[in-house]
Image (cartoon, rainbow, N blue to C red; front, side, top):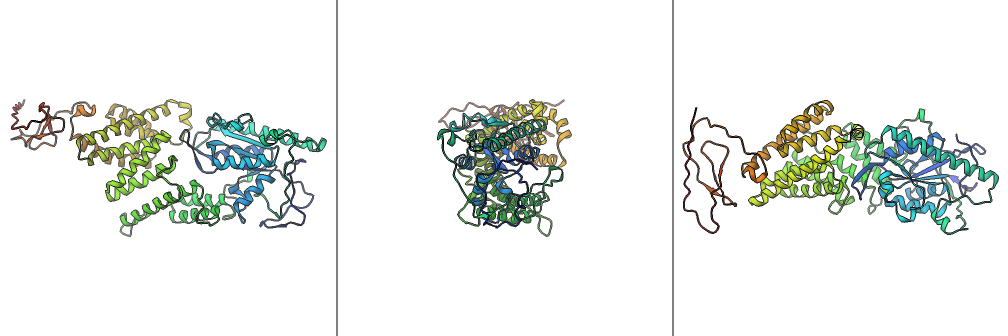
Length: 552
């Protein structure tokens, strides 16, 4: 345990009674220092760049190991015992914690507010960290303060970066503890050098005094060698509920995941109907609700009505908590797009297709990611076949290929950065999305070039999902290409194939919107397009066609 004379600004009254389930520490025993980590949890979006960062990874792989190195007990609001009001407990720890570490990554509004509360209450022992890309956009009021930066890959943090930042942050904490300890022993009446903009600007300001009316304990500190992720008793903290729900989701027990995520939302909101939970919890609840509807019926086949009901319920969860129609959160938009896409699959209702395109496309332009991009390209291809107007059909199909080209460029850039790509956990999906983009663009040689890499890194599940997608994409592309000339789509001419027997006659010609005439030979699946140069405004009385076929 870290033993030092650092102490909180105020101690609980000796008359206070403990309200936590654990007992108060033995009088006179050395007290372990506490560090309250002000941060979001789960996946959070940086709306300026569209990047999504898993902030749980920041806490687990960077902050907690650094605190472990100096034997400081660090925890977040979701790790604390939540038998009381979550707001009350959060404010208590912002004030009482010996050290506060605030992670400004994603510029989360709640984090900035809580950091402001700490700066107003305590003149020192507050440490600010942020992901390196975000450091460039730190607000002016904090621009003169030291912000310790780390690099985050989104879903994972590189091992080398973990080692570097843990060593750096633990050094910062050790120095802070040592200096504060020496000041308390040698010159306690003198104020500490401040790291708060409030106390720095209002020179001579006296820190507020607060005497707690009840006792609370931090979550128990467990040495790293003994720590287990599921070490917290179920139901004691919000974090333990989230862990239990995620475990149920992973084993595909979606009914249990729905129940526990529901408990987590109730715990965080205090059961107040008008209060919104963290967007991450709402997204997770919608996801497992959607997945729960995909279970087979007694005959082994999908019950379409059950699946549709679950999808609509998931849609309502997002509407209630995440407002997808006005949201710029890529996770919300991608999930909303997936729900609408599946509703269209099951119902063939065109309105669901249009909504899927709206959500996927906005998510793509916010995040510039291959997932939303390749999905919206496919949905545009489907819609092209539903357009009666020839011009609108070509516009939709062309837009699909424009997005596929962008997806290809995004994936190629990811693969080109070999060091960063080697650390990514989604390599199989990058390759498969790139292959699908090549397929849609008619770049078959490039698609074939990817196959050895796909065979090497993709799981059987991913390969199966890709083949299922091609079974939908190929017919959709072929169906549309029957309606237009290859040159209208920038495609190479269709290969000619000799018919099994000479056509006896041709079907009646049909003028097209461009003035060309489409003639479909009897027995042929492919139309023959003749650019007849029909003059606008004149009725065509007849078209004379001479066709000569020779055989070897």
